[in-house]
Image (cartoon, rainbow over all chains, first blue to last red; front, side, top):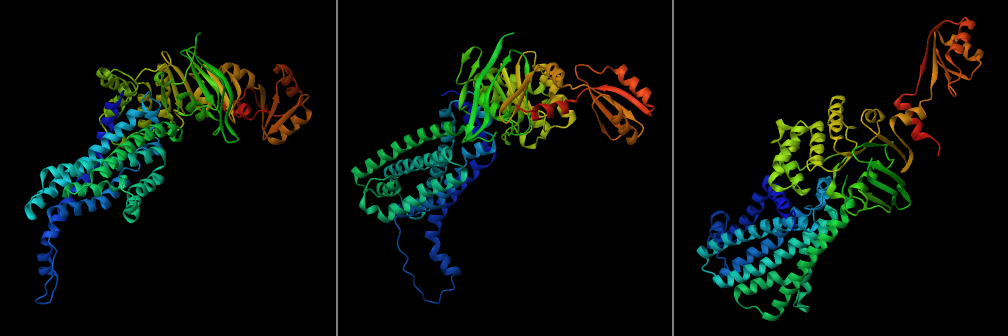
Length: 260
Length: 301
C-alpha cells in the first residue's frame, strides 16, 4: 500500500476544503429528521394551515416505527443516491480532464493505492453520512413513534451498508472507466434505473444487489428469508471487489486520456 | 561523457497519423537538450512518452544502460500547462509531490521548503495555489518537478507562456540545475535555447530534421551575406543590375550571399567604389536565430 497515506491525506483535504464533508452529511441528516417529524405532525399541520371545512376527519394511517425508518431509506434510495452518484461521478475522471492527475501519474504511485484512497474517502463520507442520518432518524422515531429493536436495527444498518458499498464502487468504477458525463449516466443507470427495473420485474428472481435495501427492511421487521438474502449479500460483495479491481485497471489504462 | 538516456526508433501512431516518427537520439549525463519545432511537431508527445504518460507504438527507451518500462522514479516532469489542486497550499502540494516521488516522509517537508525557496516562492508557500499567477504557477511546477532531485528533468515549454522577466528567472534556475541534472525541454523559441543548451534537436511533423550543438547549427545555417545599404531604392536597384555576383534587393538594401567565403569584401568594395553609387554602409551578416529556425523546420527532406 505504498503512498496510500499521502493520497488519502490529499482526498481528505480536498473534501474538507470543498465542504463536501459538511453538506453531504447535512443532506442525509435532513432527510433522516424530516421523515418522522412530518409523519407525526402532519395532522396538526393540516389542521392549522389546511383550510379544512369544519368537521373533516382524515383517517391517518398508524405507522409502526419500522415503517418510518423504511420511509427514510426510500428517501435515501432516491435523493441520497442521486447526490452520491452526481456528487462523485468526477472523482477520478475530473482529475484526468483537468490535467491535475498528470502530477500523480508521472510519479511512481501504485494505481491500487490511488483508487483505494478515493474508495476510502467515499466510504467514510457516504457511510458516515447515512449512519448519522439514520441515527438521528432512530432518535426521533423512538421519541415520536416508539422503540425499534436494537438488534434488528444493527442488522438492518449492516445490510444497508453493503448496498452503499455497492453504490460507491459503481460510481468509482464508472469514473475510472469513463469521462465525467458518461460516468454520471452509467452510475445513475446502474444505481437508480436498475433499482426501478428490479422493482418492476423483480418478482421473477430473488437474488440481486438491487434487492438489498428491500432485504434490509425485512431484516428490520424480522421477516427476512435467509437463503436469497445471504446469496444477494455474497453476490453484491463479490461485485464490489470486481468493480474495485476494474477501477484500478481502468485508472491505469486511461492514463493516456489525461490532459497534458 | 556518459549517456543517461537513449531512445531508439521512438514512434507514436494515432490511427494513420504518426505524431512521432522513428525518433532516435541520446541525452548525455548532466547536459541539456532542447527539443525545437513548431506547434504540432511532436514535442509534447515525445516528452509524454519519456514521462510514461503515453505508451510508444514502437521503439525503445534505454535509461542508464537498461531498457526500462517505468522511468517514473527518476524523472521530474513539468507539463506545458501545469494544473494544481487549487485547495492545496504551495507547501502542501510540494510536500505531497516529494512524498509520492519517494522522498523519505520525515524529510519531505524540509525538502519542500528548500525547493520552494530555490524557485523563489518562500513568501507565498502557505497560500493556496488557486490564487497563483502564471509565473508563480510555472515556478511551483518547476518545484514539484525537482523536489525529489530527479536524474532527468523533462520540461514542456517551460518558458513559452512567461513574460521576459519570468523567462529570465526560470532560465537562470535551469542553468543552476544543469550542473547536477540532465535536462530535456521543448520550446518553439530558439532564442531561449541559446544560452544554456548543449544539444539542439529539431523536430518537424514528428521527424528529427536536424541535430547538433548550437554552434554546429549556426555554422551550418548561418548563410553569411553582405548587406549593402544605399541611400535610395533606385541606387540599390542599379547596383543589383551591375553586380558581377548574384544579388537581390529589398528596398534600399542589396544582398550578396557568400559561397565558400567568396566574394571577399575588398572585391565588393572595389565594385562599389567604381559604381559611383551613394553608399551608406556595408556589413557582413549572418542569419538570425529566428531565420535559422525557419530554415531548419522548412528545409526539404
